[in-house]
Length: 157
Image (cartoon, rainbow, N blue to C red):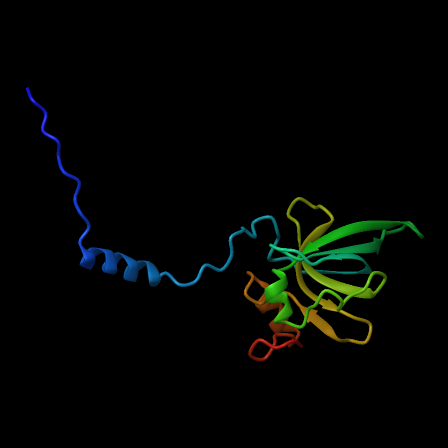
């Protein structure tokens, strides 16, 4: 028996346009990472001092020294993640908005594994001014709305 090669179908321009149109209906991609590592139903707060701000993509990392419970003079180092520098700058953040040693209260979603860190909701400084996390991240807008910290049309609070 002689096998006959079956020709590949050539996509028609109408089919290509229709496929592209359907793909565009999906809406924007919100994030490339999962938030599954954070407990989005358990917002917490932690007082401490800024140890370091890593202003790098894909996420800003804010390191915080917080006093160990019941151990005077002892500190734990915590790491909090936020959105990208570009997105954070739209909400009032900059490389220099927090300095090493600044006292802050970190509001965050904790890590599910109990580790020392989480996802930033907002930072409150001693003067009461706030820096907010990514309101498009799961749970963040809900928590910001509870404290009236949600920005009006994308501005810093």
